[in-house]
Image (tube, rainbow, N blue to C red; front, side, top):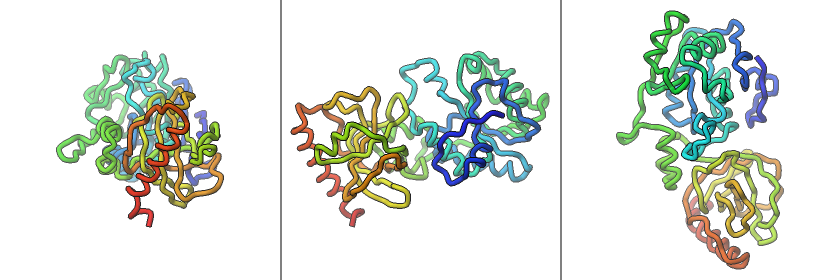
Length: 331
């Protein structure tokens, strides 16, 4: 099965990654090759506690039955493929999601290119070509709201109806709730968008964070006295916007900082949102390094200022406010 190795920030060597990550552009290239597997399919955006419960079940069934554990996802997301402006902002870029799934311990991640071929595939052909022939499914674990096939005709009832024909078992997962609300990527997005990072952490099982490689920008921040590490978000929309107090990890080292997520309206040079982070009490070169930025508190909305002097004044205020917010943690 042809593989494309994404430059993953995990400790496996290249050979192991080639065995774990498969990006499928053409369904004819998807073959189980004798593999017997336990499979879960979904977007897994955020890899929240609900997803983690599914992954626990996948790994458990894999161990019990000596099956390969496979998580299958889609790229782009279906609503993005249709050009729907209401397509939800991603909590994770594809790279972060794959890293999280592999770190959880699954044997393989299969990413299906969502294109016209997959969009037009009937539900019965999805079962035959993707699940049976392509993935060698013996045990399928999905949520009770899972839909598949052209026009989302297929559901868990259909999966069960076809299970004897293709010799697999179907297991649906229990809904996890927190304070009476179903844990979902939609709910996490709402919490992140409203800067309820404590609530988001409760559903994710970890702090909400964005990871990426530091890239070169215009070096304007350095000229203004506030050098920034710039990270492309690799998504059409950001799940949050504004100025934030953040915790930043560079390898094993931890720093605190001021972050802006947005389109830099004062400068006016950004078409898509970008993450800019000014690290407090740091000097050095971060270019090409991967950093993880955890969001702690929102300071204000992104604003357009009349000029650079006003911008510098406000950044100075922001940094002072963030140091006060994080005083106890920074000691």
